[in-house]
Picture 1 (cartoon, rainbow, N blue to C red):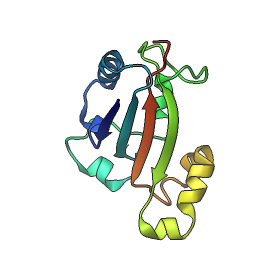
Picture 2 (cartoon, one colour):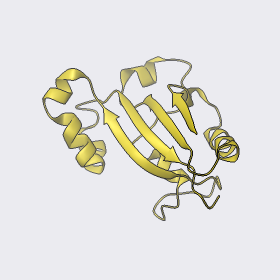
Picture 3 (cartoon, rainbow, N blue to C red):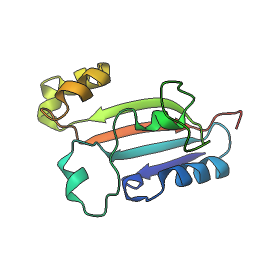
Length: 129
């Protein structure tokens, strides 16, 4: 089973509730394929219907990562893949490669100098849900 949530989650008022519902209705091993505007994308701020912003680590709050705050939801996924997407020029300059190789460094020091466009994430419903 695969669920596609492309350019949807940024419009959802209660992300924890939606992810809990997706986990509830999906079978173990199901993949939720997410594409959202990256937090530095001008479109993320420019669209008045967007209610939230996403970083490389946003979905870690819905995993068993001990370094993230997870007190607000019991929903847990496995993050199988993440990718920060850029426009053609920044891809050609190697910035996309750099940002995905060292996302923490990119987000803390270069994200507003070289803004990305999208964040793609694959969430997997764990077998032990």
